[in-house]
Image (cartoon, rainbow, N blue to C red):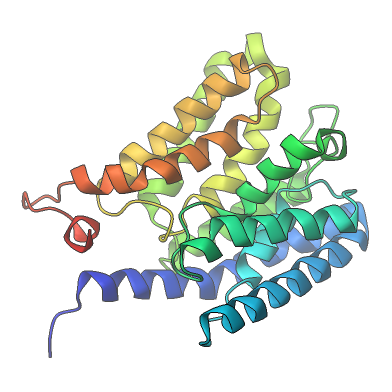
Length: 277
C-alpha cells in the first residue's frame, strides 16, 4: 500500500476538522442561545440559507458540483458576531466573506482567509455601530466577570478537538498559552482592551486558527501561532480600537504561503505544503 501523499494527509486533516468542529461548537451555541435568546438560531438559519445560495450559484458558474461545507464557517461566524446583529447584516457579512474569502479562490477547500473573521472584519468596517454588543461565543460579560458556562463550553470544545486530533496542538496551545501569558503580564495597564482580545483569541485558538486549509503545515505553525498573539496584542493595546485578533488571524492567513515555503521538517526536508507549491 502506498504511503499517503502530502495532499492526502492535508485532506484527511481537513475532513476531521469539518467533521468535529460542529460537535465542538455545539456547547458554545447552546450556551449562547441560553444567554442571548432564540435570535442566535435565527442568525444561524440566515447564515445557512446564504451559504446554500452562494454554493448553488458557485456550482452554476463552475458547471460542476462542489463539496458543501458552508455549515462550518456559518457556525463559527455566528460565534464571532454580536447576538443582537440584525439578520440582514448577518446575511450581508457572511455572503461577502464566503465569496471573497473562498469562492474567488476556487471554492471549498481553497480558502485563503478565515471566512468567519473576514465577515466580522467586513461588518466592523462597514457597520461599526452594529458590532458593539457581546459576541455569541463570548465568555467575559460586560462588567469583566467570567461566564462560567460559556467558558466551560469553549474549553470543552477545544479539548474535544485535541482528543480527536481535529486541531493541531501546536496552533491551539501556543495561541492560548501566549495569550494567557500576555494578558497576565499587561492586565494591570490594559485590562479594558485585553478583555476583548481574550474573548476573541480563545475562539480563534480553538476553532478558527486551527483550520488546516488557512494555516501553514509542520513547524511553521509555531511561527503562525506566535505571530497571531503578538500582532493581536499590539493592535489591541495600541491600535486605537482596531479589532486586534481579527486582523492578526487574517494577516497570518495572508502570510501562510510564505511560512510554508520556509518551513523545514525535522529531517531537513521542505514540509508538505512546500512540496505542493
